[in-house]
Length: 341
Image 1 (spheres, rainbow, N blue to C red):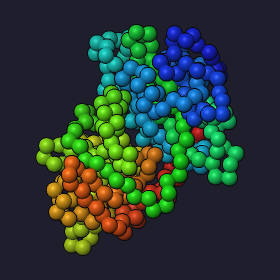
Image 2 (cartoon, rainbow, N blue to C red; image 1 turned 135 degrees about the vertical axis):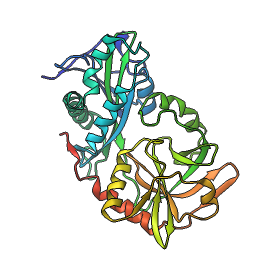
Image 3 (tube, rainbow, N blue to C red; image 1 turned 90 degrees about the vertical axis):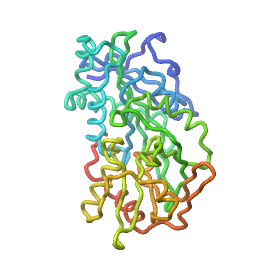
Image 4 (cartoon, rainbow, N blue to C red; image 1 turned 30 degrees about the vertical axis):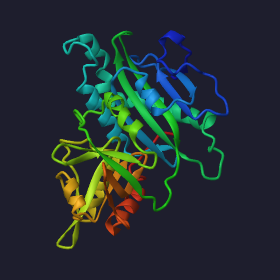
């Protein structure tokens, strides 16, 4: 049984106070206010809450970003469930590692089957309400998909789990779009854990990023390229006239849901993947035929220009292999998507 409950202002996360909807609303947040219980009670907030505001209004915890297809299903749903449960399993949430109370409270969020039982009704209620009461394109000829961000954490202050989702519009990507990226020397701690602390740490990079730059790619002191702030990064070279896709090994980066699809496509079409760091110097020396980023919201975007300090590398036209992968990804996202509505 599902309930929608109003809760006292003092118990709500900061930023999320307004509950009245109007024509300027762009987002919706749904929180299970009794997250440790089975009979879910939800509080819904409509407004203009951004992804960063949503994530940073909670104590550090596990998060993931999802997208819909056909507006009623979620791409790589099982990947996102595993990402949350694996991340929660590696977190102490600021508590003593031996605190049995916290371990017990977070138990359902560490178990994929139990977490799925909790997250599906929350997503269904949130997505339907978002379409009905917030999304301006719902009744248009070409309605937009939704971008969904999940947050799971534990409040030491309230002595309870916190479990919520943020819904907002996901505009279509123009056909043939390529992007500019910037390289910065910064490494991500524990990339295998999807910890919202990273959203805090990357905020300065986002703030300083030029407006026409789509993503910041992280590089270490050896000029090895890891991943984007919120994407995976891959480069392509030719070996014996055959394309080889290069990507930092999975013990150094987070396996994104779209990267997972790219791996499947490469295996299916006998395209070799080399799990080694792409080197920035190789790009400068013209050893790549192209590179691209992948993420839930952007799918696969070829890179047009890379900037690093006073240097820039331009790929004058998209590599055919990258355009092929982009096309295949756009088809593959429908396969295995989990129906929510």
